[in-house]
Length: 539
Image (cartoon, rainbow, N blue to C red; front, side, top):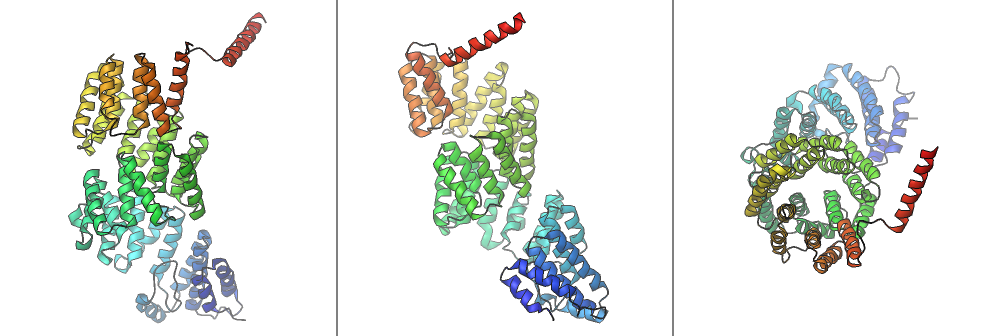
């Protein structure tokens, strides 16, 4: 019996890929496909089977099948081949679509390249794509080439291909974002309709976060419920530490579209910072039910597991970067966990990985803190100065330089100047205020520390602010005030470990118990250990 090709096409259209590829196997192995069968017919059959395998994610088999089709294409009579090429405009070059009325070798090469790309075999994919003449490339082909060049760090070629995409269609948003991230000026990629959007992306790519937020806010006035714009705003707010505003925007997005996955790992990090583990748990549960294959889901899992099992959390972060080697937050989360696990050298590599993709504030912060963790002061200072150079109007970059100077007693005066400069640039920047207060405490100026921090109480409901005030009050023996601030910190964030331990220590002090004395159980353990040691010595 003959195997009907139209039925295979119908199965593909209905996403019944396994059935399509099984039927495709019957098609190419049918006894009616003899030595006398035309090469074009054989090629058509192989391509149809290849498309079924591609959609069923059997990429190796798909490549093998497409290459068999190319072999038959080479022996198609020239007249037939010419006829096939003339109907190029009647078909899509996507591996997800097929039209058996025409065969084009360039499209088959594109399908092979798409298979290699899906398996992260960038070099092999580029070899196939570079065999397609530039004039024959469709929009999809140009976009794939751009991504492959970018992935292999051939920036100049990537820019050329992304620009080619915009010549095909000026509204290819991912090409616009990529060009902005690669440092192309807005005027070189702009289209009138998308002018503000392009300018906003260029601002963000050049670390001008304020300019980017202002432009996105302008867009939001015209498109008040635009999920993409809301997500971009929330992401930038998360990067620069405007956590409450970012949380509000992420929650607004989730209320509009509860099935969104994009940037939800950013939202997960914010929920963890706020100590809202109930919402975090629900978010991760939702993401797993929506699409458990996305890198954002594994970063969110990593965030959830960080408190319970840091090594398990690290494995989730690593999986996110294996799924998508360009997923920046995966590298940042990985670096954060490695630093927490006291592996600062490995953390540097992770943060450098994030920085190579896009140098934002968090990758600089991670690098500086990692270098400081293994006393590489010179490297830490270099990274902090890089951040200041990249973000000259950023108070957070100034604070980073201050942090490096504050790490040794001889640099405290310089650190103080950088923290004060950061506060002049951004008077409401709590991080700089906390750092400056810590310097005051180290140098015995507790009163200055308290007066500085109390100025922020009316504007900031922040657990770390209350913890710092509590620590200063406790150090000056103002125990009641210290207790009040520890309790305030725990009301804001019940998971704040510093507040829990500080309160426990304070309660011991107020009862007249030495806070550094071990608990009774600990004493027994110490006595047992001493006894064991004595026995060992006697032996």
